[in-house]
Image (cartoon, rainbow, N blue to C red):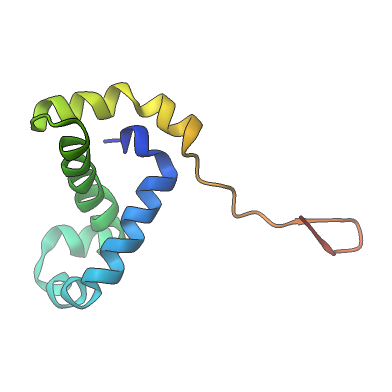
Amino acid sequence: MSSGYYGPRGARLMMDAIITKFAAKLRRLGPSDSLMQAAGASGFVQAVLVPELTVMLVKDDMGVGDETARQIMRESNMIGNLLNDQPDDDVKVDEDGNSRN
């Protein structure tokens, strides 16, 4: 599931916030949870927790229920990708190996 109008940048911020807030819990629960064992903590956060947090945020933003929030997320995915794109982490270098901004 996408992050709707929050886009990749919003998804990344949500993921960072979840990991920061719940790092100790994720480490403690990881060995006993089969999904976390299969996907790893980051994969679990990205595949399960970020989409659920997005649903809760859209519900709060729009004053709607779960299904409508999920529909809004699907329908606003393109605008989220355009407006809230995740900047590339690539460092551009010139012919001499110096970084360019």
